[in-house]
Image 1 (spheres, rainbow, N blue to C red):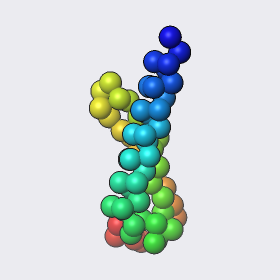
Image 2 (image 1 turned 135 degrees about the vertical axis):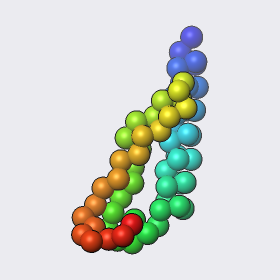
Image 3 (image 1 turned 120 degrees about the vertical axis):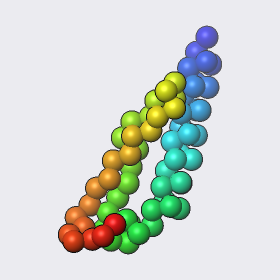
Image 4 (image 1 turned 60 degrees about the horizontal axis):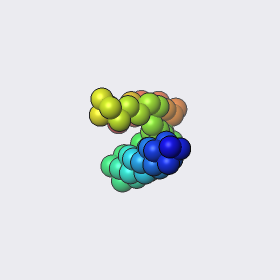
Length: 62
């Protein structure tokens, strides 16, 4: 049934939200320096998350 797909999508959305909140809590220095961190890829089956770091931090030690 389609409820399986919906439940899976809801679980993915919840996991993405949890990861995003983790990034916000644990990488505030990146944001303070004009950088960013975002989920690029999420693979629930493998238990892998690829995080894309970005920004224009020139000479920043972070």
